[in-house]
Image (cartoon, rainbow, N blue to C red; front, top):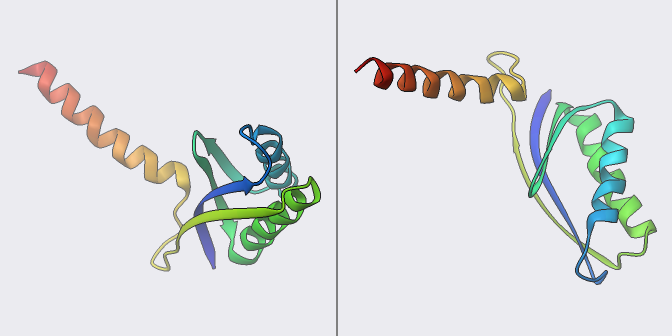
Length: 108
């Protein structure tokens, strides 16, 4: 089963800046070869269920290895079985609607 997730890993007890921890997690996602897109408050990842869950686990492992005593993670996920859909398709669908609206307003 394919899954698209929105992952937000927050190391606790490491000070104010968490960039080095997030960078380490990003390297794990990249190494896994999964399609992903980092954004300001997390990362979207898509792939097979087992592969995505394995990289989420690996993110926790590497962040702990870097010294974070605690981690809190927010995870949103979606699956669908009627057809295969990729992250970019979801975004493109909304962008197409917005573009059509803009074009309609420009014509008025």
